[in-house]
Length: 539
Image 1: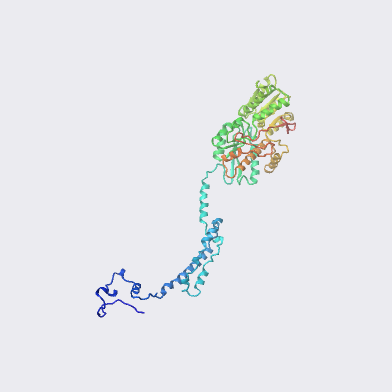
Image 2: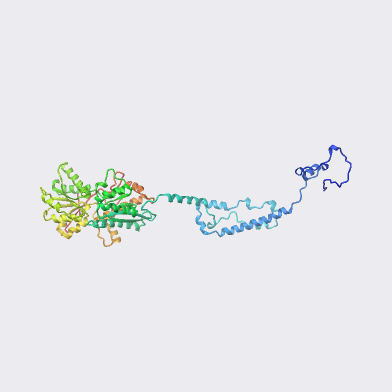
């Protein structure tokens, strides 16, 4: 082909064959660099066909090198992914498997070499390159997948929410801690021992079965010696030092006047105290106070009606011995209410008293000697040692006297004290109970005695420890119904919703927002000459 060049100064002059105004382009002055005509413009002006220049070899020599680098990089990446630590697999979630697989598979267009480039490559280059790439259908092993960062971030965000929930006192992932303020010294120490035994017996059974929602139950005790002046310190020791969740089976009516307000001020559970005092049975009930047993008023009413209807006594033939405190007052009020109902609201009731934590009943006996007409029955609202001392000192004075006690006396302790004095002191003594007979064959009683032999071998069956055992089982049922997210408010709400718990005592346990007493039933028992209690019908 012809090649054109621009004229220069060495070219010989020639006569122009054209007019001055029509000079050829090559004789025009050169324009600025950016206006210089391109080869394509020259070709179009002179009618020269535009022929593409031959391919520039240097442009294509870099493609094989680039593909080679890509192949090496892919091989190194595959090697690195094959050696990922297996612990990354723990961070993967099942929900992100599809996303990770899709992200790890290259698009189909990225796996091909352009056809224009492929034509310029040596034979086998493409095959070697594609062989180094993973197949699109290949799925990563679980241990090689990248962590699912979205799932990990969600899981990490959930952790602060869980930790942000306020801790509940006395509750950990492995334990629920309860407290009991009771007498472990002084004249009433046996009562504290029996109550502690019954609670720990029920807790031991539950703990052996895995606890309540994976938490073990623990009881911590504090000694107040049945003295209200020591009760506040005992409560503080349990709640402020030992950090208990709530209180279970605290002992006593006079001590409850101190311990109940302390618990209520802190919205702490006060469950199943060993007392039938009306201060724990308000109408409507205090939200955090729950009772297992019948009240003293219910027991006194059952006794008075039994003496009048079954033993054919007149109401004025019945007197009352009471401890000089809230316990005695509660029993006294129950007797008075029942007797006035039978009398039609008229008449006084003969009352004798003695001081708490003593067995000095001499003043009461002096009152009895002065009483005219003489009474034929005495309702004992006392602890077992004081009651036994009163019986001892009056049996000879009144051989036909009927002695009847409420359950707060501690029936097993009373029987033991009387048997020490002799069979004639025990024979015929009546005692109301808030549990089925210990020597009976009810399923709940048999389970109690079986557990007692297993966990505390050598300990005799006792009405007080049986009551504590039943109380603890009602509490455990409430904990189970509440679920693992335990706090006082949720437990109280679930207890108030309990309507159908089968404890095995004849009546089903029922609570409600207007009734926080599990049972209202009263059982009757009577001692024989051997010191054994036998069931009697109080109706």
